[in-house]
Length: 315
Image (cartoon, rainbow, N blue to C red; front, side, top):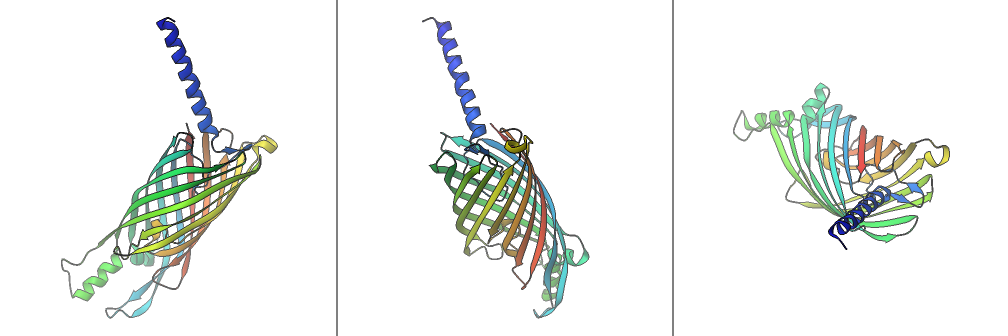
């Protein structure tokens, strides 16, 4: 066999393998005949190769903070609203068809939008990264189950106007110990099980359960057990009406919200998503999430509404 023949054969095999990987990668979020629609807050069991970006913004209402005197007695309560935004970038790489590694980078910020909330919460930013390993443990035509291991580290920086004023009063004037800037690190380690099942070509369901350990912002010397869990369902009009439009509905609970662990513990969230389903190698979706959060320093809850634009490309 000539060198030219060998080269043509190698090229043909390479092209076939490439086409196979691309097709397999784009359809790996398909079970049965149903194409699953990803939901940001619900980890899925799919080992796709993809790039994802997300941009979000929202507002929280009913935030409260106690107003204390120099003796530590509560004089009243500061009530206000918070605005926040977020940016995310994610890359996941499929490994051998049964596993995947994912790296996610994110940044978010929140600020009071009235006098009382600015005084109570100031300006806070949270940024960091998350690394995750995923492996399929059960795979059927219409169902799939995977285990996930996740490690994350986030840095919290903020301007604490009220805390700064209190420290100045307590110390009798400005000293080197008075700090306007507060900072902390958040470490989180967890293991999870995620599953998905295709009911029909137009209806799918997914869910996850996650447990782990995290360091609280208020006390970096102590770890606490954390829990997350949620379910989602998605409805695709494409198989029914040939309309490339999908709807997703999800609920989840997080005992330790990393983006706001310094002010709240325990967040119940409901998400509604509208997605484009016309291509299997591309996802475009808009999610609206409504959450209720239990505050850490007062016996109160406040509500938050977040809007998120998701873009995801599958290789």
